[in-house]
Image (cartoon, rainbow, N blue to C red; front, side):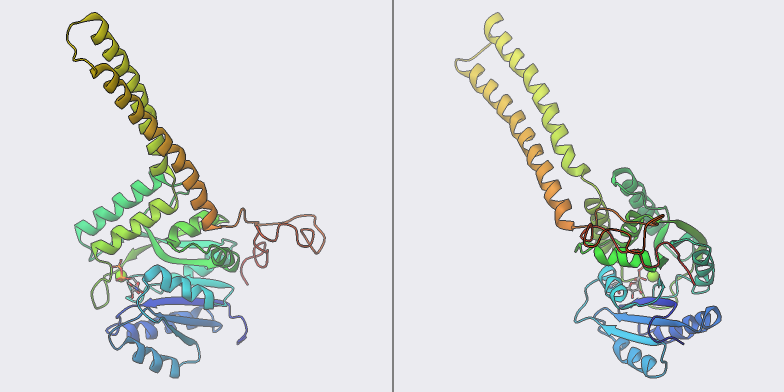
Length: 337
Ligand code: UDP
Ligand code: MG
């Protein structure tokens, strides 16, 4: 019953979930009670416009395990979860949707894996009932594309339903970027990761809060935040264009010298257009390289993360050294318990 730092924090983002939230709390509470009495549930109300805030207030009043934070407006799922992570104090933190599409019972398996020493245990959907063909297809295409482009692979068919060790949570807290795709960020963090398979249920009630527009925005975040490929494409186009322009120049000169098929002044203009076109693309590419670097500096992610230190005295790193870049060890070397 340690109020200070519970074993398990569960974060539930809620946006207009009045229809499900009480049922969710009941089922989640029951499930967690069976795993450990030492847990907290953090509900993050993401600017709901229905009765969700009042219902959450009642839930909190009725249970010392429940905590509620209410955002000032709708900031979006990923930000709501990020807010919850800041408030979570558990040694392990679980992210779960409010709509019971991710069965709370799976958390028991996640905790088990965590106790075996894994730092991230993500839920991987083995089947998804009650989703449209379109949603399945777009989700699949999204993961394909992102894994093509991105510097870190995101496991197929995973959402945000996952357990994270405190070491990973602390690392996430150090990643202050504004465009956040948590499932990609936890993948970037590294450490020991594993999956538990589950079948994704239908929404218990209410409608999806993820229209196509939000899904596309999420996909764009995933690609642009984890890949410089779009910028690099510009350089390649520039090089290709320059190569073409050399051919064009040879063609123009040949026309001028070997045939009568030319207009006065044409050769020079044509050569100028070709060369400058190619040069412009190359310079854009050069700018892109710098912008890419500014972008990655601006994200200000930790330079590296440490999972384990062996053979060092108490202090580990020399005091003050590397503090800027590394994430302190804490539970990293010894997850669980
Ligand atoms: N959600 C949120 N803010 C939003 C949209 C959604 O906090 O702007 C929450 C929502 O309440 C739910 C979770 O994010 O707990 C996932 O949303 P949803 O079930 O609508 O997405 P789907 O399962 O359809 O992808
Ligand atoms: Mg859902």
